[in-house]
Image 1 (tube, rainbow, N blue to C red):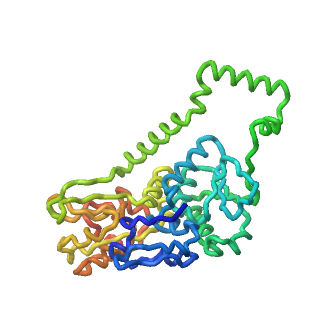
Image 2 (tube, rainbow, N blue to C red):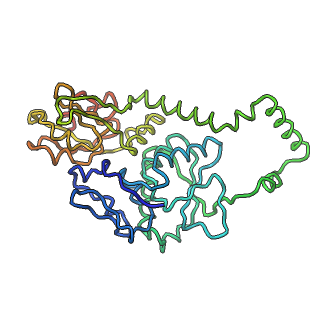
Length: 355
């Protein structure tokens, strides 16, 4: 496994004054090249993946944040508790149970993913001994600080709770698992009989079908996407030099929107930064469109500025690009991004909406 960068999702590469990844890196392994794109010093990198937890522009070569969520979701759909731990807590000879996900560092999980799991009532438990964070070879004390803060944020936003346990469930073989069950011979016979009925009727095959579960999951996600109108837009525009404008929903923002779909009441508890424009100063030069990393600002076919605050990550690249200083970052609640909020107006919201 190695850490990889996704420059097209880097706000700094688009002109923002952001260095969150460099500050968070416990090994000081991240720098920026002449194009302001993040560069990883492979010799210094400990592969803790903390950068993946704080920025969409980082991933591992083996798993993305989205695939991590899909894996955790599958564990929950099996009716099991989702256990999370880190490699520092796994010792030679110990095999964790199948519902235990081992991360390089727990700080590799962004706050938005914790929020999404809690909003969907997924039973989450962190199984680790925090004393190992003191001299962790990957993330030292930085990892504990970041992942505990991410959990605090998620709990405050959703009202849910992440549980903690110092013991990690261990993998046991099937025979031992049956032996450990406390039921008498009659209960055991009934269990076998029920299984036989299920097999004959085909119910058992349906129960254990990962394909069916995956289909249900995709259907559920499609329903949430349709409800929020999150389809990535792309169309030809005569207003842009290359004639193309597109929107790309940042992974962490997508998770926050999906959390809102599952728990709408959380919107008032989520504070975010979004951009707002002084309409009296804006001349629609569209410089901000070229700087926007997510496509929150795009140009219509007629050459007008169109804005969707749901895509805005508050990076400030548009503010830096505006030649008339007409853009400013403002703090708003997540409710402002919804259809009735000031951030969801068809054209860029006026600063007056937030005053």
